[in-house]
Image (tube, rainbow, N blue to C red):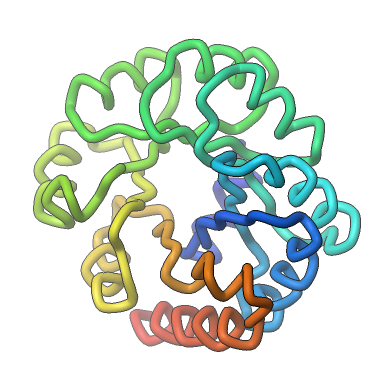
Length: 211
């Protein structure tokens, strides 16, 4: 867990990827690397997810690759077998969390209420996904629910774009920010990996300007 977290804190951004064809996985990964962000959360929203993770792990081994939208222990097992080094879920699913904890796989479950934060704490977790970030009220709401839990870090995801980055990343309790704006599904499907590279580079530059 600590190694994955340290890399996420260093990178500050997690591209949240929906990929329809595993053939696009390696070109996408190389575009992310070229843009300065060797990291991806491949969501299990499509049948190509596990194969995409496997191909990236084999062909771009320096990438930090996780699996997102994991809804069951079975999906978590599939993702880990494909090479995912961390798991992200949209909500707090005790079965998924317990499976990952037992298997020693870093898990960042989604939370958006104090009750869910406390459920994570009860399972020994100190870093969670805040989702859906913007729909729940954005950085103001996150600061409000974070206040009672001084040792919890958050990975806000959901509706966040380049304009919102400064507000989130200036909050010291944010480990990293997840977003899909830099890895548009349409760009991936059409093979517009230069656009991915350029959007990623702009996002990386924005994080550097924040110090």
